[in-house]
Length: 265
View (cartoon, helix red, strand yellow):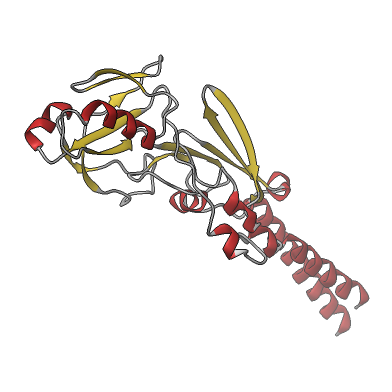
């Protein structure tokens, strides 16, 4: 009998030790400083070499504006570039786009060559204003990144390259597009790789802390790569190994229970 109970205790301990600590899979634990995180200023991404921009010019005199616009295409904008993200789309007029070349310049309709590398969209609007206000009445602009893509790798349900129709996306929204992290994903060590001005930046983020809201990497930039590491339990055993071990342990307990019952009676 002592042997039987010892085996039961060992089995329960094995199963319990395999249970994951819920704190390791909970996002943004602890108290929130709502006053602090509601005032976070989100930096506008800067234009870089290789970017593709949609720029639409409007003014009070449409006929004069026409020569500064590419042919507009109305239809569904691009959704996610990988499987499982259908339905993330929108309809808006867009253009074929202005490509920023390796010198940081783009050939703008009606104005010629403009140097835009390192500018934010707001700064580009100011540049266009300076060039177009002498010819247009109350001009205004809609500028969007057409190559707003980011990559999700590692312990997410649907790893892949994603694109969005909007201009701003935070890390939790990106996780939602990728189907959230798997059971084995490390929420306390998420790696973001970003290229800025030809230099590569690396940042490790802890999604279990509210401080993530104040990180400059919380909002993704075009071409960001996000890597979700696996926990040690993933390295030691995968799902199939865990299931096999539980099956073997259950069988052993059943066998010893039968033997104990036979010897008892």
